[in-house]
Length: 173
Image (tube, rainbow, N blue to C red; front, side):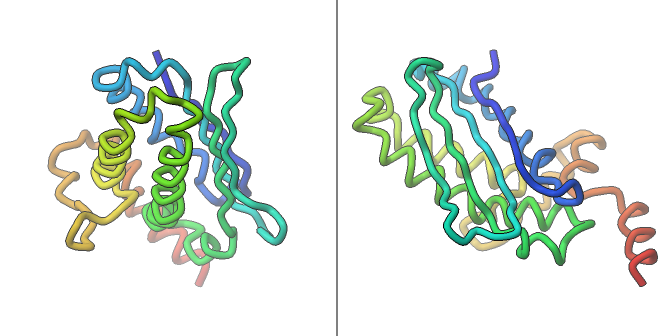
């Protein structure tokens, strides 16, 4: 059972939706380690032209039984990396992890089940994001050794196809 859902709102050249789907794999960790969580996590990633007057927000939808996290990111930060999914992933990590961490802590009083697992859940998310190249490790380095432990298809989704990158670079020039 997937315990995470993803939606996005951004121009097509920004791979926010594709990258956000990485988080669905975190459902496995939720199932194995946090099966006491009895609600779904719903993440919405928005890379918008303007963020003026628009704030990221979190809300628990009691009737649907899900915690929605709507993260707003400035599109301008993605624009220099239109063809670089790896850099777009790093940008998302920079915004997502502090937002996730802060809001899981904020909801420990509204969702008491989080109180006893908050720190572990946040740490497991941090480690997951490091493993999936959203965040650097403790030394500020991205874990590029992941290429040795994942399938070819996963490596291509994390780093992109070098042939596509070089032809897209030539098209820009």
